[in-house]
Every structure is written in C-alpha cells, then in structure tokens.
Length: 596
Image 1 (cartoon, rainbow, N blue to C red):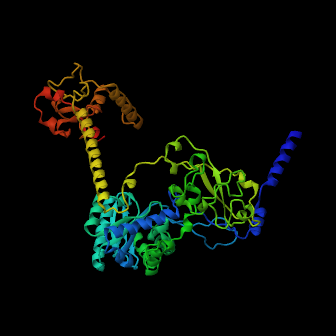
Image 2: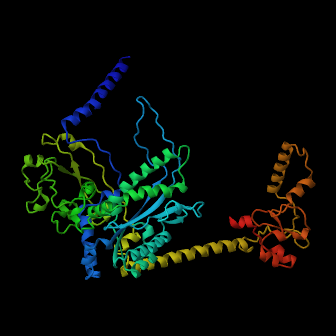
Image 3: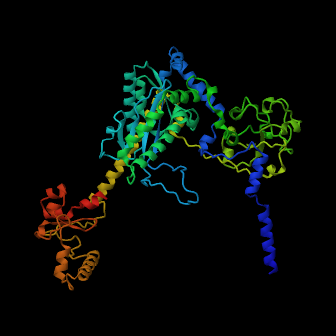
C-alpha cells in the first residue's frame, strides 16, 4: 500500500508539471506576437528551395533569351501576350467538408456525398494579359457514356486510362495550344512555362514546340508553389470555388450522387468565375514573370530553407574557406551569424574578423547583449557526419544546421533551448535521373539530343522484352525444350502415349471426378456414379462441352490436360498436320493456358 501511494503521488506531481489549457492561454497572453496557424504540408524538395536558387533561375532564363533570341528577348519580356503558363490539377468529386450552422449541442452533423474518391484532371493555360485557352479536361476510362460537351461546349475533352496527364494527351494539348495562338494572332516566338512532370518531357513534344516557335522553358524544380502562375494565383481560388459549386449542386440535387456526367457543367460555373484578367495578371506578377522582376516574389515561402539548407562549414579542415569559394554559403543567406558570435552558443570559439559577410549587421562578435536583442536568433547546431556523407562533395555534406529560434520578449534565450534535440538531416543518395541531364529549355539542341538517346534506350529495352516473351512462348510450344514430357497426344489410331501407357485418368482427374460425384450426390441428382458415367463426364471437350466424336478427333493440352476436339483446339499448326505420328509428337497449348 505504501508503494502504491508513492506511485500515485509521483504521477500527480508529473501531472501538475504538464502544461494545460490555462498555461497555453497565459503564454499567448504574455506573447501577443504568437498565434495559432494552420501549417501547410510541403515536400522535402520544396523545403530546400532558397531565395538564391530562385534568383539564379530568373537570371538564367533571361540570359538564355538574350543568347538565343537577342533581338526578340526585350520584346518578349515586355509583351504580356507572349508569356504563357500552364498547369494541371485534379478536382475531386468529394471535396473536404466545411463548417456549417447547426443547433447547439449537436454532436453529429453529416453531409451526403457520393463517397467516390475519383477525380478529374484539368489543364489550365493562360498568359499575363489575362487571355485563357479553353480548359483541357481529362476523363478516366476508354469510352464515354455521355457527351460532356453538352454542358461545357468550349472545353476540350479527352480520355486516358488512368485519368491523368500522359505524354500522348499532353501532345494533344500542345496541338490545341498552337491552334489557340493562331486564333488569337499572337506574335511568335512565345514563352511557355511548365513544371517537370514526366508527361511534359518527351521528344515529340519538344520537337513540336521547336517547329512551332514555342519556347518550352521548365520552372525551377520543387519551386512551383512560389513561381508557377497557376499555383500562385489560379488554382487556389479555383479549388475554393469548386467546393462551393459542388455544395450548391448537392443542395439542388438531393438524393443524387455526383458523377462524371455532371462534372463539366459544375466545373464551368467555377471556371468562369475564376478565369479573369485580375487573377491571371496577379499570378504572373507575384511569380516575378511579368513584370519580369525577381523582387516581386514572396520569399517568405522559402523560410524552411534556412533549416534544411547547409550553412558554411567552419571546421579546422575548412577554416580557410571563404564565402566566394563555397557555393552553399550564398544559397542560404549573405548575413548569417557565425557560431562564435551567437550568444546561445557560448562554448563556440570566435571566428576571424575578416569574414564580415557572416556577421549580423549591427552586431559585433564580442557584444552578446546586442546580439541577444535581435528579433530573430539563429543557433548553429553541430551534427555528426555519417560515413555515407563523407563520400559526397564538400558542399553536400553539412556538419552545421541552422535552427531558427523564436524571439523572446525579454531579449534573452533560456538555457532550455541548448538542450533541444535537433534531428540530423540525412540526404538521400542522388539518382542520375533524366531531369538532371536536361537543361531548362527543352527545345535546345542539348535537350533534344538527350531525349533522342532516351528514346533509343527505351526502344532497345522494349525490343529485349519482346524477345524474352518470344523465347518463353517458344519453349512452351517446342516439345524438345520441355524435356520431351509431352502430354498433348492425339487420342486415336496411332496416337498412343509416348511411355506406352493407356489413356487413363490421372490423379488430378480422379480427384475431380470424385468431387463431381459428391456434388451430384448432395444435389440429389444421383447417389452412385458408375465408372462409365464418370469417364464420360471427364472426356468432354473443354471448347464445346460435348463428349461426342470419334477417337481420332481429340487432343490434350500440354499444361492443364484439358481435352479438346481437333476442330475446337483453335491451333492452325495442329490442324495442318496429317499423320498420326506428327500429331502425337506435337506439343499443344490450349487457348486458356496460352493467355496465361
């Protein structure tokens, strides 16, 4: 009993130390600059995108235009009708439910939906002038039971087996895009911004754009949520309007399920509300594409890069490195504090005063008070290296990670932050993918050469695959390849078994006969089955299910031992054989086993 009281008292002390709602409420009251926010999910690649990477992409695009189109480059960048962007997204049949009004105390509030997880892919294309191409809608399946153009005649409808964009459907979209440029009488060449989706990267698409003066330029990988016009200013309001239109449709069609037949009409209502000049122009402006200015981009979306990107390593082995010789320094920030100047790391040694670009402006290496009063503080945490990281280049093997600490009202960081455990960021081994071999401009000669080589490799792999399948089929059809254990023998004169055995049922057939007789006995058809009846039942043709025919008209399968009439075997080679010896030595495969 004494031990139980000790355990209970210990649990009560632990419970008292835990923070509850009152503590959280008081903490938010003491720090009015902190508030609850819904976090957005990003991939690891998106978390590593930095401001410097985006600026480098902008500078590279401008340099490419000035090099390849020296006379047209200023005209293209200053003409909003010649800057286009396209992106595809899925629109689900059952979007996420939202808050509704209900009586107080109601614990269960339901909304009737179709319950289907199916979605339709839509490709949206527009330019900085607010001119839109008709939406490109991709339905899943092979044939349509309804005509979606009745509800949305302006849209272009196509189908794929999965409902996603593939290389064939994207080429079809490019043909429609070329027609749109001709109808709008837009001067060429035009710039066409796309992401690195696998359906966008193909030889025939690149050749089509090159022949029709369409500069297909790929956006920075994993940065489409920052610089792609579709993601920045179109799909956000379009998805919200789509949810409202779905809700209105469900209220107008009580007791009905939303299907593919209703998609085009509902999507037209949402699309016409969002496809405006204001949204298109704002999307290009916030992406920094028109006006072409990298300063218009919201670089606050790159905040996660300060944690995931490596800082300049300041170890004894690389103490002589400078920001000019280390490419990883410029990709993080030109004004990051040294580990020796940070007040949260008093144990770290001071660095040389010559590296002034790494010190926070307005602070000195020895002034701990001023550094602690900065609104945002950064702590350099040392992380051990793995053996796999040692084999990588110096810029890809960080030993220091920057952790962004929140600002404290009193201007000091507590000792608890020093005990925070920061997980080590392990980089996956880099794969030599096609995207890394290609330049951003997919119509360049270098890109076409890489894509042609990729097509040749794919054709060679397909040819080898067909050869393997042909060899496998030849082994099944060749009796010598199967060790001479042929089972398909003609059942008639001169068509005896190779081993000299009679045509008696095998163990598998006997077991099947026994099971069939038991089933018939249970059903009351017959209680006793004679040997002649079971043998007649076993010797039915698997093609026509008939037991009639002379002994010369039968043949057995090499694999499954099913018996067929000669006229039901569907084998032209076997039907062309005349002598009984040739028929007996032939290895027959029935249609059922051949398909397997």
